[in-house]
Amino acid sequence: MLVLALLAVARGEQCGGHLTADRGLIATPGFPGPFQVPIRCLWLVSSASPTASVAVHLSQLYVSAGLTFTEYAYYEPASSFQLEPRVVHRVTEENLPNTSLVVTSRPFLVVEFSLDRLEGNHLRALDGLLDVYGFNITYSIQTDASHLPDFSCTAAKCSMLGNCYATADYS
Image 1 (cartoon, rainbow, N blue to C red):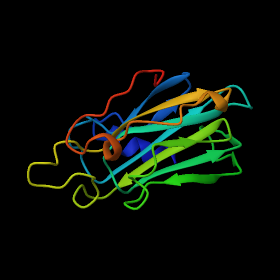
Image 2 (image 1 turned 135 degrees about the horizontal axis):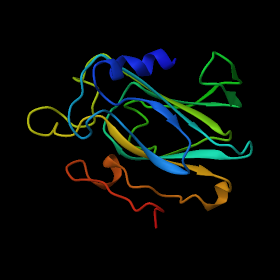
Image 3 (image 1 turned 45 degrees about the vertical axis):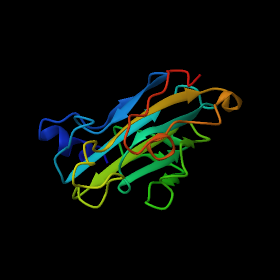
Image 4 (image 1 turned 180 degrees about the vertical axis):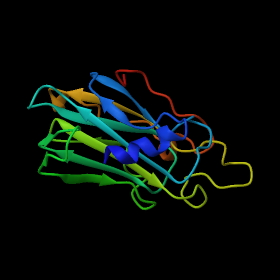
């Protein structure tokens, strides 16, 4: 799987990685600009606490395909040793407008992005509106899921034509 992340890196783009900070960003290379396709990226978000969970706010999500979130009970990035994978969410045209938050029940979350072409896979249409490509989403490692906000600004909920921003603590 790490080989997938290295494909975009080999072309000089920052794509994928192992994320261990309490919060951070996951974005397509050069967001909000276009990126080279085909693209294959893998991000591993992991916590040192076995009881932690990972929350991902889909605040600037403009792709309608190719993005998958899989949680693991254990994930060893240097080998193929992974325990109990479960797909938590797969972005589709149908669920894109309704999903603003993805939350795991485990401390390891793999975010995979795979796209062969830009056309037909974005929320905005061509001819003047396709000026934002890919995604720029926020993750946070949670020790208490009861403190998660029950809202999140998304491109579909806030404005198809504007920018969607949120503060670091979503207040």
